[in-house]
View 1 (tube, rainbow, N blue to C red):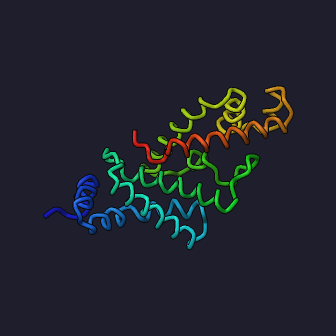
View 2 (tube, rainbow, N blue to C red; view 1 turned 180 degrees about the vertical axis):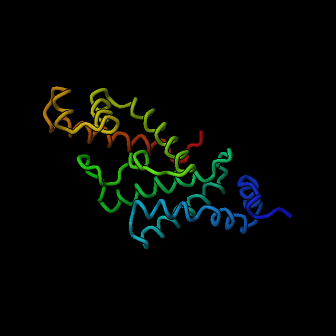
View 3 (tube, one colour; view 1 turned 90 degrees about the vertical axis):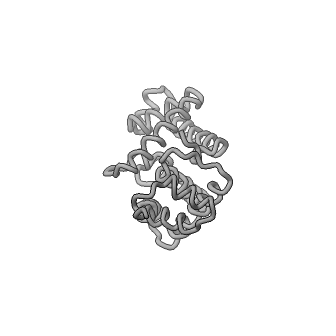
Length: 196
């Protein structure tokens, strides 16, 4: 008999799909602290975090049952990205989407900026960063330029306006449209569920 921790995630997923509900419980128990910790670090409300955690595993179950999970030994990064997407949905639904002129609000780049990440979180961060960078390239040049200067070079909007020879309002508007367009692309392509 294999010990619980030595059973691979791929085996547990196969076992769950064959009808063994306990296999899913083992998967959840294996990762629940990391996943819940990530959610609560962003939402900072235990009850809401519990809801998002539950929604995350409802989405995991539905995706597994539809046969849409690509088995590459990346179960935790995949679940964390679903949780990340649901956190963004929470902010969108509560009309608390971040403003672009502050570093403290949560936005789609906050995972990239987090310090002190563990190995699993670094894998997720790298994947999200790769996804975002490739999506940024699809934006119109003026939006891409402002977004890259703001997010990657950490310029103020005053500096961006000066360097691009436009007003601060124009720079802010371009950033706003860049983020709106990025979110549209992410939703249209269901980026969170894509395994590479």
